[in-house]
Amino acid sequence: MSSTLIKAPLKRRSLFKRILPLYIGNLLQWSVFWYAIEKLFMLKIGFSTEDVGLCIAIYAATALIMEIPSGILADRWSRKGTLVLGNICLIIGTMIAATSTSVNMYLISSVFWGIYVAMNSGTFEAIIYDLLLEQDGNANSYEKEYSKLDIACSIGLVFGAFGGGIIGQYFGLQDAYWLSIPAVILSTIFFLKFKEPNIHKIGQDKSLILHIKATFKSVFQKKQLIQLLISLTSISLVWLIMSDIHQLWLAALMAPIIVYGPVQALSSCAYGLGSFLSQFMKSKQRVLIGMFVALTCLVVIIFIQNLWVNIIAESIALLITYGISVVLTHELQNSLPSKVRAGSSSAIGALKRLLTIPAVLLFGFVANNSDVFKAGWLFVIILVIAIISRYLMNPVSKMEAQNE
Figure 1 (cartoon, rainbow, N blue to C red):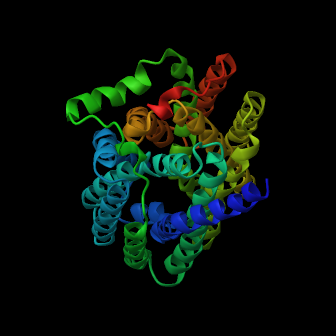
Figure 2 (figure 1 turned 135 degrees about the horizontal axis):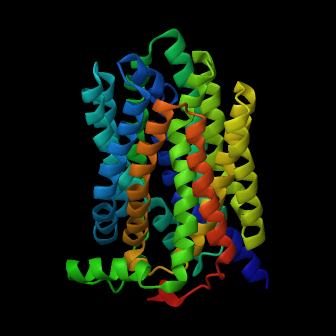
């Protein structure tokens, strides 16, 4: 008994020491100043509301094209190597955006940002899940450990948001882009220092074709996962699009530039706090309650067009929807084989991107021809779909996929 008690803290320390470079790398990766003032910079160089929707659609389309190849690359080559490639694309995209003087030039930068997003999509989740399997023999503490990664992400985003607001206000919007690059370079160095788990290499198909077939089969041939996928995809769409367009609501409410930094910081806390709260939202009932609270917040945003009410409601909605997405992602990871974990997650990510493109184009169209608040009904509809799917869904049991 005493031996077991001694080994547990040692295991925790060993896990923390091993994952620390990933925490630091993630924090630095998200310490980006230009996220806080991007929409203002876009409007300054000639973007219309519809152009903003087009820009989001372009990076979503790029991410869609790259999602599955990047996931298969991560499974067959190196997951940390895929993260490094993503950082390189982020640096290139930032440099192009910083020198942009027209809409078309900025759209090119969004292509590189889309590749960066694809390289990260599903990779961190696969790393954490497999690392727990390798260290503990199970992934029961997935939400707890993944929340630490998200907290690091939130700290980076908050730092970047406050810094971006200050730089945009007192130096210049363009400077926020250039000053973001050093942190991403440091992030790359820490990713290279991380010792990734290799459990996904066991029993891996030598044939690329067989690997691709196994990737799709693991997700789309399991009937019990369909409703889970609908709920996960719907809830992810809400926070994914909201996190991109929420600055348009601030612009419509005539918020001063200095407010953008703190608001972006508050919204960024949704990753860390939402992920932390996911540990207490595992039951079907709590997930449904969270969905209804998020739905209420969205209705408040649409009808009460007040700056501070908007900020609070938007932050709560982002926090809850992200937390729920972590819970549903854990349920999904329970059913995926390690050898195709990143690729399967990327296939689901591709589905999200596929739906994001028409969704943001529709949002941009409605916002341009009516207003950005009426366009918010799109989020309400998507969230209702998530609620219905979750309500009808039977619990997904842990399958033996992780042992395959």
